[in-house]
Length: 212
Image 1 (cartoon, rainbow, N blue to C red):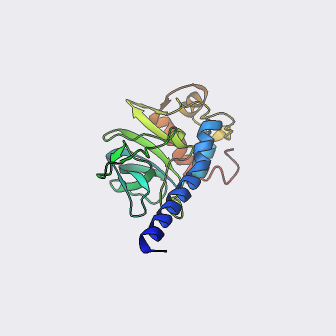
Image 2: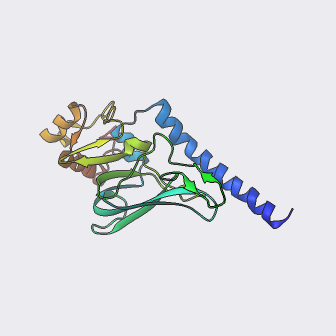
Image 3: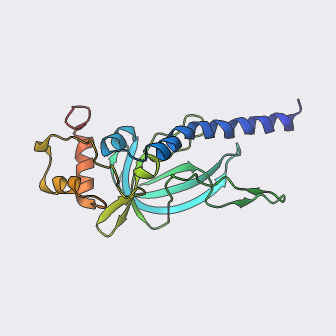
């Protein structure tokens, strides 16, 4: 087998592996289309609130298409991210089809159900750990784990449907703003949501059985 053929097979293997690693969250987004706050927190390695600084795309050395997102961190409920630092991650897929310059067009865009990112928007991102082989990341619950701030409210790609379904929290830990937020459909108050998530992580409510 010559070197060109070996490289071509290795590239095909990497792309197939990336697709398999992403199959579970994609299937979850399409089949379940609901993931509550307890699950989002549990599945996240990082939870940050900040502004999207840049969004670019490309194809890496292993021929895997990606979208690269950089967030200027305002605060972090989970993960080692200091205020005024930046967080950069790569999500599978291109922003738009890419001309490869050889008469071919690469169509591998971000899959349906994955979050879309836009420079300048303020977001809360619940990020999974990077994939072991590809290093790619996406949000917990796919589009459910990216909340966009509109004025003083936050809303995800599923209009927050199911966000508090089945969530049980010791009532003594909640304030009036938290309680009101958990009973109202649609967009949530940003300050109340960040307060709830921040205390839940810092005080380990899930680990202590105070949040289920």
